[in-house]
Every structure is written in structure tokens, then in C-alpha cells.
Image 1 (cartoon, rainbow over the protein chains, first blue to last red):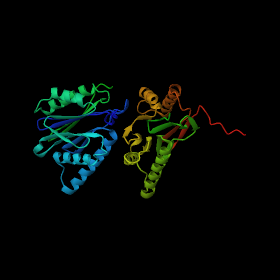
Image 2: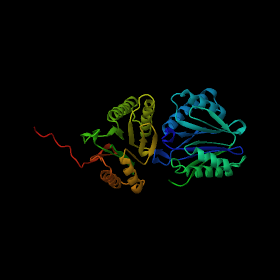
Image 3: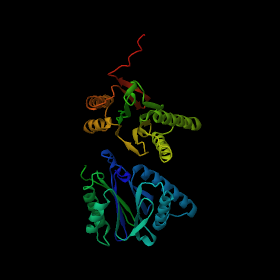
Image 4: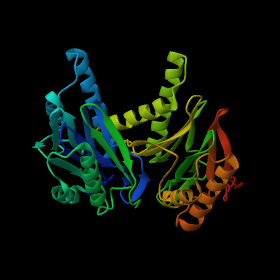
Amino acid sequence: MSIFEYNGSAVVAMVGKNCFAIASDRRLGVNLQTIATDFQRIFKIHDKLYIGLSGLATDVQTLYQRLVFRHKLYQLREERDMKPQTFASLVSAVLYEKRFGPYFCMPVIAGLGEDDVPFICTMDCIGAKELAKDFVVSGTASESLYGACESMYKPNMEPEELFETISQALLSSVDRDCLSGWGGHVLLVTPTEVQERTLKSRMD
Amino acid sequence: MECVFGLVGDGFALVAADTSAVHSILVHKSNEDKVMILDSHKLLGASGEAGDRVQFTEYIQKNVHLYEFRNGIPLATAAAANFTRGELALALRKNPYSVNILLAGYDKDVGASLYYIDYIATLHKVDKGAFGYGSYFALSMMDRHYHSGMSLEEAVDLVDKCIIEIRSRLVVAPPNFVIKIVDKDGAREYAWRESIKDAGVSAA
């Protein structure tokens, strides 16, 4: 069994009209056993930048701590928040540093850049960036997520519709993956507010 | 096979562990205490390779004490859990410890809490947790009977149910268990559950 499938995870981010949504499942497992159903995979870097980390849970936690540390230093030096594009390059560099002994994590980065233009990207475990204009996915349910997002996604969705779409895409994908699921966690970010919601789903 | 499990009740947390020290087919002793009293209000139940278990838990205990001596106040449970995870994570890619840990503690402001720390440094705050082959039985029993805010009698009753299940259903079931409790009055041993007492050395 692959090390990426040890804990089980699913993360997805989608772009809407002047907003973005990022969602993840909530299961923490150890192979076939479920340990917890409230595990946090999406982390806030600053008000308009979020990172979702899928893959091995210990590396998710270590990588998050390292990235928050780097961002806080940046804030002290530059006296402002990092732009999403800059943060994506930072994550890519941090991951490539460990090229021959990598963190087993696939990050999904979502943020509102200059003029509140939504930005999303994903990368593999050694930092190969993949920018997208519509949606990005990661985790054990990634193949299902690709299919669900491709069929459900429309450009320029309003926040409410975007929330519905990303929730349905996440739930239908994790239902086909035994290693992820047990609820969903969705964050919808617009220039003025952040809505955080927990989804009830098939608990199995 | 080694087994540690624990749960959080109303103003207290319980950690139970088996007490057999085993090497391959040989049982060295059946009254080995695997739940360490970390400080006045913390318990550390550990399972894993014998040398790593003792060495790592003593290392954590001494560092927790050092913090209290240096700073005049004890570490909070969450801080101790994060410190433990940090040490495991640091060692993970150099010289990994094979120790699974359940850290229970009582803080005046937060109340009782239980932390699940994997051998690969996955940290999660839980209401109930278990490690080892016995976890398959203990977690299922706790899923069925656990509810938040259990009284001490109910919780010990549940622990006994788990022990009975482990003894009857696990092929190489450990015969004896120790139960320790931590609440506002501190961390202490609560009871032993012995079905085999260590025989004294008979005269030659």
C-alpha cells in the first residue's frame, strides 16, 4: 500500500466569480482503521489564502507548521501578507528542498490575489506546480474528484452556487473512496467574508 | 500483542494498558507498567518496541519536568502533546522511534483531554483512542458504549468491557491490565486487572 494512502484524504478547490471555495474530507485513518472523523486538512495562512494538504497526516502537520513559520517571518520582514502566487512558489521550494526524501503531501493552494482575483494551484509531493483556472484536486479520491468536478463545474459561479457545486463534487467523490469521507469541510472565501461549513455525509 | 486505550469522561481521563513484556514467544514479565505518570496532572500510555518505549517516554518525562523547573509552571497538556509530536517528527527521518502514545491530562481551564500520537508523529485530540491489535475490539466497544461526560463508574465499566473483549477475542491476549486516571486531583493509578499473577520464585 502506498504511503500516500496510509491516512486517506481528499481536497478540492474551485474558482468562482470573485471568490473561491476549498473543501476537504474529515477522516483520519490508519490503513483500514478509522481513528477520527474531525481531522483538519485545510489551514489558513492569512485572511485571503488557504492551503489544503492531502497525504500522510504527520507530514501535513509538519509542513503546515513550517509554512506558517515561513509566512510569519515574511509578514515581519515585509509588513504585509504574501500573495498567493508567491506562497505557491514558497511551497514549491520547500517541497523541492526534500527532493530525495520528500514530504508525502500534495498541497492545494487557494487564495485571492491582487484586485481579489481568485488563484488556485496544486503540486505533487516534490513541488511541481500545476496552475488551473477552474479547479484543482488532490488526495486518495483525486481520480473521482477529477470526474465529478469536470462534469459539475461552470465558470463564473456565484458564491452560493459554487458552494453547492463543490460540496456535491466532494461528497460524490469520497463516497466512492473507502479511505476518505466521514463528513466534509468547506470554506467559501469572498473579498468581504469567509464562510466555513461542515457537511454531513455517509459516515462510512 | 501490546494494547493501550483511553477515553475522556466528565472531568477526568482514563488510560489503560496491558502489562506484559514480551520478546518473540517469551513473556518476560506480566506486571510491566506502560502508563507513565508524566507529571502531577498528565499520563503517558505508550506501546511499541520495548527499548524505544522506555527511552522515549523517560526523555519526554524529564523534559516536561525540566520545563516546570525552569519556568515555575507546569506545561499544559496540549503543549506537552505538541512537544512529544515534535520530538517524534524530528526523529522520524533520522532515527525513528517505534512508540505509539496516548497522552492524557487535566488542565484547570480546559478540563480533561486525550491526545492520540502515532509512531510517525500524527497528532490528534480525541475523546477515545486505542493502539495495537486490541484496538480493533476496544474501539468498537467504545464506539458502542461511549458518550461524552461519562461518570467514573460508567467509564471503568466500559474499560472492563473492553478488557473482557480483548481477553476473549484476541488470540495472544495479554492477561493483565493497569488502569490509570487523571483528574483535578492529579494523575494516579486506579486499578489493576489481573488474571495471571506473577508466580514467586520457588525455592530450589
